[in-house]
Length: 96
Image (tube, rainbow, N blue to C red; front, side, top):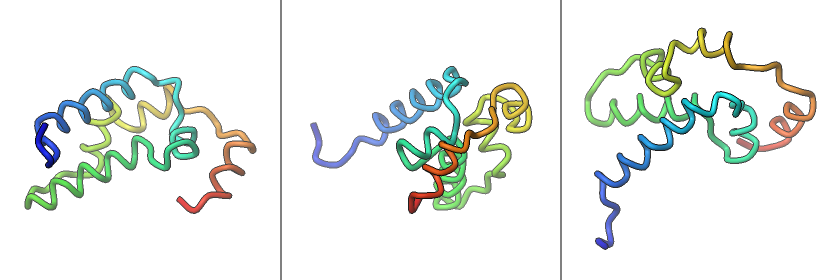
């Protein structure tokens, strides 16, 4: 394998991760943040940033729709649960 990362392989991995998160609506963003330090919103922001680095303009809400598989407000209504005090305490105790 090449020493440098293969961009096509990375794109396939990113697409697989995004599709996995679209299916795993039971996984809450706060849990992702607490365990890994990133969530679906972070992926959306990274997508916007990557586009900007290539002189492309991508709206943040459009990026979130791509990552969530639907408009963010719709996803929130369908799948987002109220964060527990334990989740919030864990999140607030980290330097994320």
